[in-house]
Image (cartoon, rainbow, N blue to C red; front, side, top):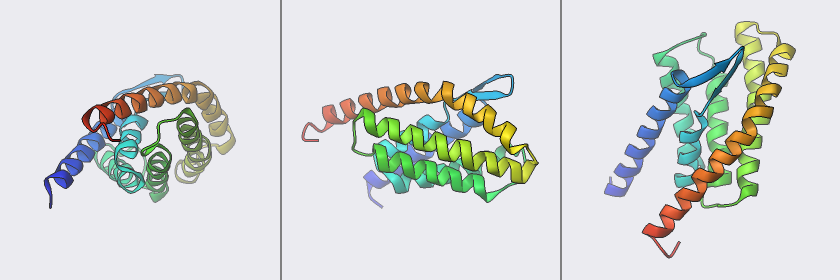
Length: 170
């Protein structure tokens, strides 16, 4: 295994650990709405290494997070949503530095995945009221999507700036 591959694997593992810490321990909770920045490490993996690495990091983070702090019985649907989120971030943010790609990535991850699939998975596993949960998630998305877009875009700008400093031909 080459040194570059080892460095890549170590960086992805570090970002997975950061994602687990952000999603399980470092978040804000207002009433029943939970806000956090757990999307950042997976989005960063997607920006740097593409959809396969980001999808793998999403799966690893979901499984490790569940193993560390199980809140409900394990359900593979949440892992599938994490896989899809990583793949979307990787497809739309890897080697792309535009507002449109950032808006599309955050919008697709929040709307179909967070609003639709995760609400459905909670309904199936925990017996949560689907429509009540959907209303709360819509409120959350209205608040968090603009913040995620701005934070992801800023991070993308600095990542691409740093890459261009290290390798001016890119």
